[in-house]
Amino acid sequence: MNSSIHPRLKTSLDLAEGLVFVARQLAKFAHRQAPSPTRPRRGLTLRPGPQTVLWNALVLAIRPHLRPRGAKSKLARFLGVPAPRVSAYFTARTQAPDAERTLLLLTWLAQRETAIKP
Image 1 (cartoon, rainbow, N blue to C red):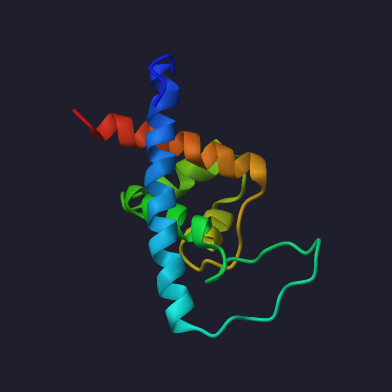
Image 2 (image 1 turned 30 degrees about the horizontal axis):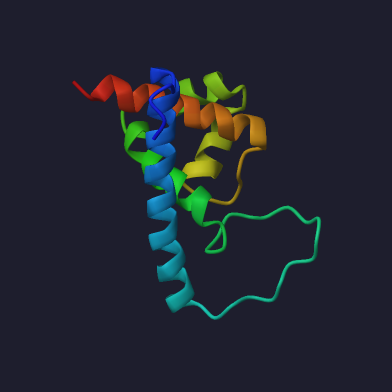
């Protein structure tokens, strides 16, 4: 990697590399488990499922941080969405956030990951 990367950005890049690795593993698993679905029409929004491997990897990375009491409510306030929406993202897995909120989630996760490391 380039040594001129800002330390805050390096943490996010390391997190992204980990998510890509997990996404590749999930994609291999999903490919073995289910037959290839019909190709979605262009322009339609992707729904969470086996074909959204990067989103699935992000969900797996975030879920441990949502275990403490009140963590989902705090995350909902951070994202500016109703609390049930966070459950739809990470528990029911029926919805996914828009691009801006996904970037906020990556920022939130990077802050949590750096707070845990000594």
